[in-house]
Length: 78
Image (tube, rainbow, N blue to C red; front, side, top):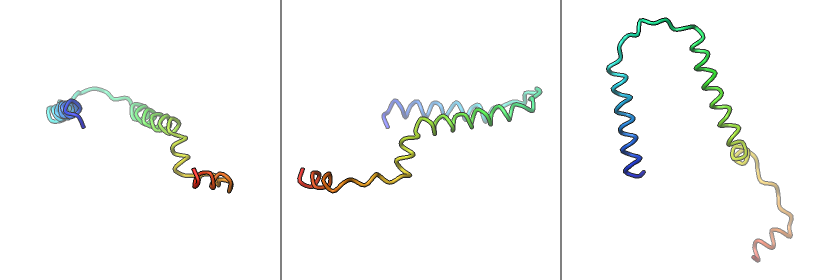
């Protein structure tokens, strides 16, 4: 990890920690549909990432097709 990336990660962690430790009550109304919106966003992100990496995931799950004997000989003699 480069020094710049480490510096950025430390800064982000610092500001998140500040936001968590110094939070104040909002005294505001939260709509019941808010949790559904968060769930929908998370499921859309998972679905999009699975769609984006579908070929790599398929390659991990399936076996490669068997090669004919002639192709095997060419690889060994190569």
